[in-house]
Amino acid sequence: MSPELKVIIYEQRKMFKELLNLLDEQYDLILGKDPTLLDKIARKLENVSRDIAKLEIQRRNIVGSDFSMGTLIEENEDKNIKEAYEEIKSTIKMIEVQKESNHVILKQKLFFTKKMLNVIKPSQGTGTYNYCGQVVK
Image 1 (tube, rainbow, N blue to C red):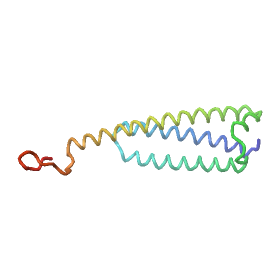
Image 2 (tube, rainbow, N blue to C red; image 1 turned 30 degrees about the vertical axis):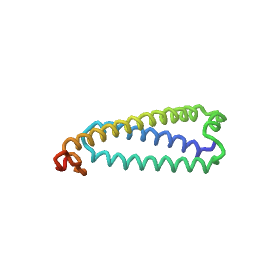
Image 3 (cartoon, rainbow, N blue to C red; image 1 turned 180 degrees about the horizontal axis):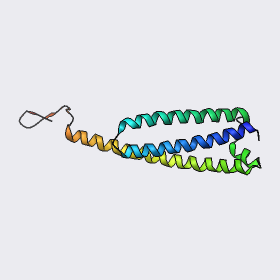
Image 4 (cartoon, helix red, strand yellow; image 1 turned 90 degrees about the vertical axis):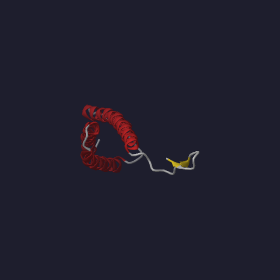
């Protein structure tokens, strides 16, 4: 395995851990009450995701798009690379779980906010006529 590929694998591991940490931070901010910080976290998440994509493109340029990462790791004899790959796989699973939980909590909060706004200020939609001929909302 080429040294450039090893460096890319270690960089990917580092970037995936950073992505997981940002998602944990996003979770804390969703539960908190400061939406302005959520925008900053979203930008950081976008930058980290972009960096991960760049690393993946570099890896595919070195290896070629025909080979999967799993087969390359199985053929490799380096234990450190195998451990890094397993760590990447487990981190990706944790990222998926954290992302899903963030999404669900955010959806619940938005639903609650929408309901509260409807209670505070009901929609001013078109009313209907009652039996006396007056418009009822």
